[in-house]
Length: 455
Ligand code: B12
Ligand code: SF4
Image (tube, rainbow, N blue to C red; front, side, top):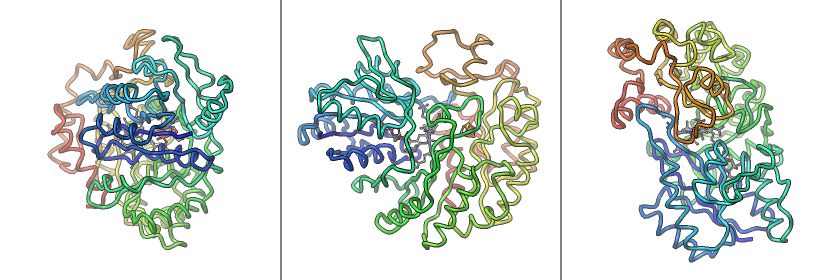
């Protein structure tokens, strides 16, 4: 079948290459289908680009990859999903081919989005096998029932076969990237790409949808296959900067170590970063000492969330304050940049716990500290249950329109004043929570981006 896959994501801060689309396209091609990709990132007139592509390619199926719903920022909100409606309508106008939806954002809100866009089919979670099965059955006119992850909208009533369809990650093809779009992914002038070394996360942080999206079991890719992808990225695509998109890169540490060996043994010269857990068990000395040699520039402890003793427990983080100190110290000693991020306002947060976190971070002394306030409430998370119990949301509320949890002991108190009192001392901290407009947010977040990109 002839399929057109469209990535409508236009967010440039930073531009995230649509890796999921590459996985789907490669899988389809490997199984005899034709997959074209239209990445709207480089298009000024998206509607015309969609219509022209459809006229030219005459696809028999059109898939939209809905990665982002919103930006999860209560102080400077952006609602991406609304912008995509015109794009999807344009595709429906131009073609009679069925339109299907997939992607992380779609997977969180399948019913809401199928109804909002008035689309019949969508795929929850990983789409390689489920979409392929769907196409094969469509082509043969076979029954569609029982396809894992398939959501079907029948006049507003959405039926879901089974949430998520976890792939055998080891057997997936190497996702070849669409070269014509690569040059839109150069946030600091360097060609920036992404790679995935595992799927799944076995942690249970109260707000996080990753275990829902990818499953709780870790599915690890063979390090050799990652090495081959690294050679392709460095050699064929001339990638200079790389980000691992895994929820936690260094768990399990033996896998992270094996990936470092691939960089070193194959002589891959790419600067890379990843999301790290500060848990001592995931940062053994032999891993930390290899990271720099392998090209890792930054240990981005992007899920730190808090450094308060009680809040570490409330947020169900698996590490301790001591882990935060030790991990940062050993990474810095090996010449890595260190980033921590706080997500303030969770259940049990008070002005005192915020102070405790910030003061603890003074000791940790990261190269930058990203500070956020307010937790986006997603379905299928523990914070959703807490928000329901506390009456922050009501049963049946539509969370597609973003709702945020901020503990009642913080919400109406002067948390801003407290955080501002640190800004003079630590001008390199990215205090995005204080921004009241998007350009103020950007001038804070660049401090984080600068450390990540090594400037
Ligand atoms: C890594 C990551 C980042 C990195 C990206 C680095 C890079 N260069 O790629 C950084 C930190 C920069 C980032 C930034 C942002 N991110 Co982010 N990110 C992720 C993360 C962890 C992984 C994404 C990924 O690449 N996965 C790997 C690929 C292979 O999987 P995939 O894209 O999901 O594709 C699979 C399926 O979805 C499906 N599929 C995809 N498309 C299609 C299409 C069809 C037709 C079908 C059938 C199936 C299908 O099949 C694919 C293959 O299995 C996800 C969470 C998660 N666990 O998914 C959040 C996530 C996608 N991000 C999110 C958000 C909000 C953002 C930001 C807006 C945050 C901000 N405030 O700035 C920005 C947006 C940046 C941008 N330009 O889009 C949200 C989106 C949900 C929402 N609320 O909108 C998520 C879900 C995290 C969250 N908050 O819960 N992100
Ligand atoms: S925040 Fe990180 S460690 Fe916690 S569940 Fe999400 S991906 Fe896993």
